Each structure stands twice: as structure tokens, then as C-alpha cells.
Image 1 (cartoon, helix red, strand yellow):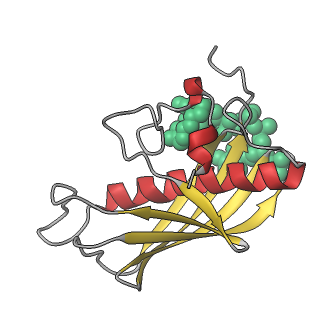
Image 2: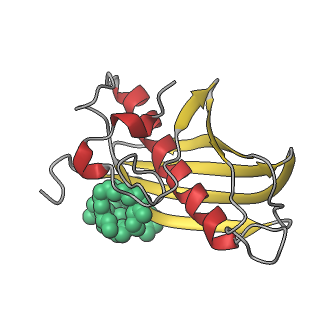
Image 3: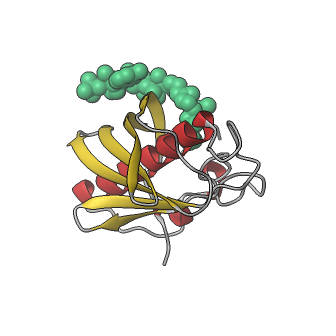
Length: 153
Ligand SMILES: CCCCCCCCCCCCCC(=O)SCCNC(=O)CCNC(=O)[C@H](O)C(C)(C)COP(=O)(O)OP(=O)(O)OC[C@H]1O[C@@H](n2cnc3c(N)ncnc32)[C@H](O)[C@@H]1OP(=O)(O)O
């Protein structure tokens, strides 16, 4: 199953967190799950803060790119955009807030769930919850803004 990131134009697909063309990056995929969004990620041993627990910066980056992916999904839905390899909205992070509620263990899958709080013409606010082994460890809020398709070209 494809994530929204599989539809980003190539020139927007190099992000360290979510770019499918960044061989060194996380390459996360974000999907709709009901009215919410979903991203899964399995941390490696080297994503360590202290042995056994995930580095917080990695968790922030997962919430960041889950937020921009969720925002792109929400804009596509709100604006009736049919996703294709040359046609997907692309959002950039304007603001990222993260609260670490509990240490996040390494070992097993992380699940990030997103709730679309607000969708405007260009701005989307996404609330995120990050779970490890079913336990809520981190919450966040991402403000994303649509970038023009020719940005950087
Ligand atoms: C380095 C990457 C650069 C971009 C690459 C794009 C390619 C994709 C790559 C993907 C990488 C993936 C992830 C990464 O790592 S992205 C890397 C980290 N992010 C950045 O470098 C973004 C840098 N900032 C900007 O480029 C501009 O400031 C943006 C584009 C964000 C807005 O400037 P722009 O002039 O376009 O917009 P606007 O002023 O008309 O405002 C529009 C709406 O947004 C609201 N708002 C604005 N700022 C904030 C804020 N801080 N908090 C809350 N809200 C904010 C504003 O009130 C308004 O709301 P409303 O009044 O409509 O309700």
C-alpha cells in the first residue's frame, strides 16, 4: 500500500524523514486510517538515547514528517485532488511542538496516529500521538504549510 510520500514529485522526495529518494533517511509512509492518519516505524539499536530507549530527536522528526504527510493527505481530501506520481500536495513544517510523556523503548514498532485539527487553504494543523508497544509515549502538534509545486526549481 502506498503512502502519501510515494506520490510526492521527485524534487520534493529527498527529505531525511520522509523522502522515498533519500537512501539514508527514514522513508516513512503515512496513510489514512479511518478519519485519522497512521505512520509506522521500527527504530534501530543505534537510534539510542540511553541504552534501551529511543533518542528524542528521532521521535520529533517522526512526528514532524508524520505531520507534513498527514497535512498533504488532508489537503488532497479537502480539495478533491486525485493523487498521482505527478500530482500530490507537498507541505513544509512551520511549527513543531513535542511533549515527551514517557521514555520510548527500543524494540518493536512505533505507531504514530494523527488527527486533523484544522484544514485551511494552505495551512493544516495535525495533532500526533506516538505509541510504543501500545503505550502513549509522545504527543505533538505540527503546523504545516503547502508549498508551491515549483518551489526550489
Ligand atoms: C528547508 C525546506 C524549505 C521548504 C522546502 C519545501 C519542500 C518540501 C520539503 C519537505 C520537508 C519536510 C519537513 C521539513 O523538515 S521542512 C524544514 C523545516 N521547515 C522550514 O524550513 C520552513 C521554513 N519556513 C518557511 O519556509 C515559511 O515560514 C513557511 C512556508 C512555513 C510559511 O511562509 P509563507 O509565507 O508561505 O506562509 P504565510 O506567512 O503566508 O502563512 C501561511 C499560514 O501559515 C501560518 N504560519 C506560518 N508560519 C507559522 C508558524 N511558524 N507557526 C504557526 N503558523 C504559522 C500563518 O499564520 C498562516 O496561517 P493563516 O493566516 O492562513 O491561518
